[in-house]
Amino acid sequence: MATHPGGLITGTRPAVRTKRLVRKFGDRIILKELDLTVAPGEFTALLGRSGSGKSTLLRAVARLDHTVEGSGELTVPERVSLSFQDSRLLPWLRVLDNVILGLRGPGARTRGLTALEEVGLAGRDRSWPHELSGGEQQRAALARALVREPELLLADEPFGALDALTRIKMHGLLRELYERHRPAVLLVTHDVDEAVELADRVLVLDEGLISVDLAIDLPTPRSRRDARFQEYRDTLLTALGVIQPPPG
Image (spheres, rainbow, N blue to C red):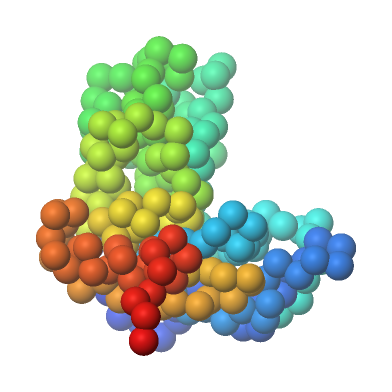
């Protein structure tokens, strides 16, 4: 897999652009003329209460919502990869074959082996998915997503089913892989700490619109004990209605 220098990737075309995006189920409008731009190489996290439209937006950007009524403009790059809470490894394929599924060309297996090495699964290429732990399955899913050199990685609660210690390890791995390959990332999460730890920009979706657009100006790796980390966390928890704003 190719590597890229740090920082946003300059270019005139955004990785994601929506304009007046509407999605609705019957009479219920989920996304209300939503405008969003994600720059190439930008790591963006999306927070919101249950039912706020986070997964609906992600599915729209992934073009997985063909049966949903809607309107508006949507622009995404050609190479898009997805990562879900369920690793979605095919149980009848070995790990390497899962990673390179759909890849063509004589170098596919070599690329797959390199990807597995990058996520810490060197030597597990011949394993079956059921032989991997939950964290290892998510590592394989990340290898599968990144081996395709995506311009955009869409991640929907990818670590939500993992135990706390494994989740911490996966945070470090995802950030490391992001800094090495620099795809644009749109991460849907319910975890405010996860959003501040991983992303350089955090959005809050509220009733189908973006209510907060917060740049996270912290060096990496980030410490949750950092006072500025706590400030960002409290700002987002206030926006989500978990912390009440101070009076006055």
